[in-house]
Every structure is written in C-alpha cells, then in structure tokens.
Length: 159
Figure 1 (spheres, one colour):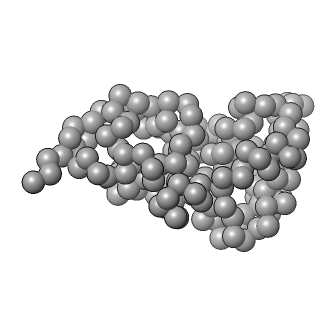
Figure 2 (cartoon, rainbow, N blue to C red; figure 1 turned 90 degrees about the vertical axis):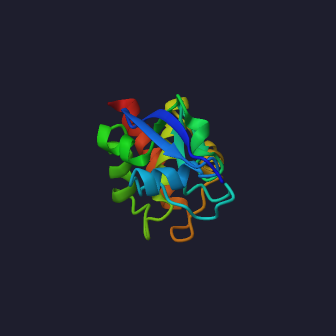
C-alpha cells in the first residue's frame, strides 16, 4: 500500500499543506488538487513546455517534477503571475500581436517569455527564439510570439 506524504509549500504566495501520493507529478497536483488548471499538460515528457511553472524562481517542467519535491518550495503558476500583474504587459502584447490562437501553449510560453525578460532587458529575436525553443506551439508559427516578446521588452525599457 502506498502511503501519502505530507507536504507544505507556497503556491502563488499562499501556504499549501497537502497529503499527496509519492508518484503524483507537480502538474497533476496543481491541476487536480489545487484546481490551478492554467498549467497545461501536453506531452508528459518535458518536451512541449505547456506545463512550465516556476519553482524557487526557476522555470521547470511540472510534468517531470514530483509534487513531493516541492516540499518547502515556492511555486508560481500562470495564475499567480497573471493575478499579481507581473505579466500584464506581456499578456497584452500577446493579444495585440495575435500571438495566441488555441491558447494551449500560451501559459507555458508566457512563463518562459517572462523568465527571459527577467534575465535580459534587451533580448534580440535570436535570443527570444532560443529561450522559447523548448515551448511548442502548433498554431501561430512563432513569429507573432517573438514579436510580442520583443514588443514587451521594448516597452519595459521605455517605461
């Protein structure tokens, strides 16, 4: 019999105490236990980037991380970044530049794009492409996404 383990962590600034089975991945924990469904599950192999979240300030693939590994950690999801207003300008640029269509990849793209913009204030298009290369989009063809990130970077520099 597999026994649940108790974990305590911070999710989007709120303390969470939960009992989880050792094999539950972070994506499923966020979606099923906490109802934070903005974290999408695509390939379940860490390849597509749809499940990207921040753990202790670093972006990770939540489908590859076990929930129990986040005991004592700080986790931020797309809901947290959106609710805090941290990515409001990036979301606006994605909308304005038509950088989203079906929306499935969008949360992971936004998480990865914000990660880049926190690291570099003036990324060029090649740096944007490289940083987002682990996030797949099957609808937009990427150019609009790169445009949106570039527009946001430019706007943040002049603000």
